[in-house]
Length: 371
Length: 198
Image 1 (cartoon, each protein chain N blue to C red):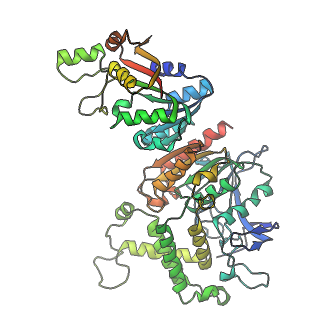
Image 2: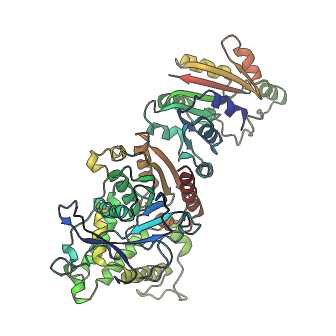
Image 3: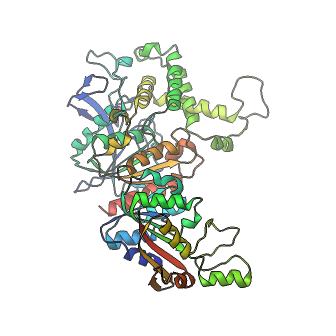
């Protein structure tokens, strides 16, 4: 799960006061970069990952040996062209790919487990802000990310209004809905109901709540796809059998697929991190600090926004993305918006969706030309 | 670029903030941005056209003018442009009111149903007119509320909307419309261009 090799780490010495009231310092942020920073340092793009992502955006992830989570979008000549831009991505705090999280040890050398402080999206971006100082970047060219990555994008530009020229939130929301919270709670309950979870102390005896985490992943995975997409891919097709077996094995391909998704997830993700990160998403409500007026969150920025949603995304539907557009328009911000036609559901932003990738590329490249 | 866009561009001073409603592929937006340093935004309903605008580096919002203009604050643009689209809305009056609320001024162009070729077509052929500005058949036209230059002229007057400039366009020939020549312009212009304010 959490191997130290191949992980670049920045130790943040400066104390960071978290929303929960606790202060952390001397904590690690694991990051990766792609492309190279130019001499003017004006070509950096900070990418924020989603719930189960990590800093390994593209190429082969050295820990899992699988393709990076945004390989379709990031790389040489791709939408986020690493021949041109310097891409930085870091593992969120609370995560399990090297950044400070529940699998780390507390000052008494005991693994945190659920004694790790509850973190928020705000804490995540405040921690990641230290990367700008680390690379000597005064202003990013762009910040982008989908899903929880999009939440971090919104929070980042609200906290640091003059630190990015362009802002691209994708398939996201400014406030987690009751439905979003409900699905996350389902996942957390699956984990904590696993007898191996042991109040989060499982790491000490090396037995993981793998079954619970797998169920959490299976439930979440359904929310990332569309009904149409599932029907077209699986329908009622049977899994390596001629007929129904009148039992509870995976008769249907969709069952087998979900079981597989659950099992591979357990190999790369920490159950406690899943609790912490879903909690951070649920607590996200950007307008709350501004008495419900979302526009106020962006009042100090001159950044150019480009918001993208997908037709079949029912987890972070177009309307929730449009609410961000509306909030920006009401203060005269520079904001573009497009809803991409796709039947791949919320996962569209991670997949080969040509209209999405070309819109992303065109927006970035044209904005960079105007630099 | 079509002559209509040149005439619209001539009505807009440099360095202004402009919203192009139904901006299509962004041809007018690009011209205004490049030649007049206009801070330009577009609203467009077609996903394909939105993509074309993005490829030109233009700020465009995918949306529907009948629903999505309400998100813009009062008088937040110096000009709001609506080119040959008013007749395609379910409720043109509502859209016109929104244009005049969002823009300090609005530039509205309308294909003239009073144009002599249109009248002749209906009079002699007895079928729905098809011209350069009205290219579609009756069964597939997006137009729901066709009007003449005279209709529009009377309409804006009756609503106490101020007309700053009203121009008649016939191919490359541009002339001013006023109360006394309204009948003639309504016959010989295929397009009316109005600069209005409320």
